[in-house]
Image (cartoon, rainbow, N blue to C red; front, side, top):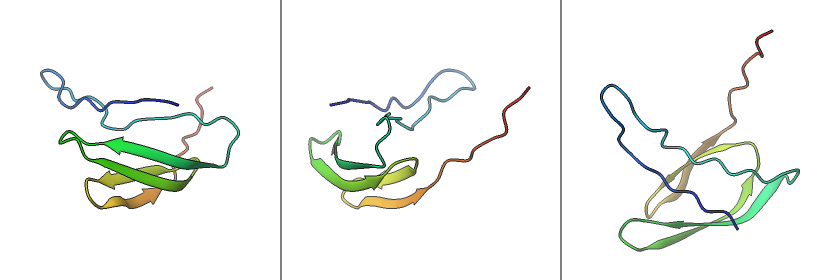
Length: 75
């Protein structure tokens, strides 16, 4: 079990990252993820492929997904 929280805001001319990253080792998908929204509702997401960014909206579930942009490593 893993837990992550989104913290919005930041300070002058800054913003916290609104993404949450979960490592799942060598697995190719995640069977289930639960989102607990600020109003107390729970949303269950199922069968999520690994190595993807998911956009989740309250009451709508996953609205889009995309692979991460892999950047060239610097020498």
